Length: 336
Image (cartoon, rainbow, N blue to C red; front, side):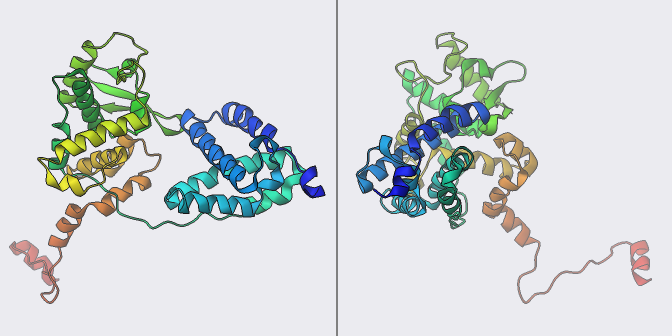
């Protein structure tokens, strides 16, 4: 070990301060953000343990220099087969930590500067994937509603489709956040600690009432519990969805070739709202987007809207139809 490495600050105390003070106290980051950053550093420490042979507790800031971070990010993409977006999420967590290092350990500023200079990788911008109404109906019809689990799965998927919620918003949904009455809605706690209300279709409200009436009346209990009575995890929701997709593919063959994730259901809600004529700004509020510009991706992906626009344009070689006045007064004005 070189003299520089020996003089370098240990990572452990800074990382503990990053989570306990910076993330939770200073930033008041959401639990989802804390979980994402925690997972990043779990992966990083295990990667460095394998590549350097050093135990995580003995790592120093010098061990986290830019070459090591670039190797880690490459590992995320190549060995773990994550997409560029996931790689950039890991990089965002590293940058946030190193900004704290710059404040707490000025002697490591040379390392901090090099890591913060690592660029965000540009990703291919693909059209969002979504389901047709027939495909969505087939998925909703898949659960066996005669069983407790089947009724829960059906209610969960219908609520998912109605609300366009993020999967984290549904897994954390409590019974007290479901308001049923003359006006039925969900009170969702979304990204960035933002709250929003999403109205419920009468069918969804009736289904939720039946489900909640048959469940233990615990206001702070999860709206969609697991068999053990605790809130479903992300993996649990995804398992329910994949099970429904496999069953639905028997009657709707197009689903067999589709990759359906919980986020695809969110995209499906947005697309169906757009195709029903709902204004893009309302859809942004519905989904909890901070800016309608984020919601513009659905306009880009909606082929039906583009086909309607195409019908207003004359085919190539035929020219454009010009306005012809049908009224004598209009014809007179047209001669002026």
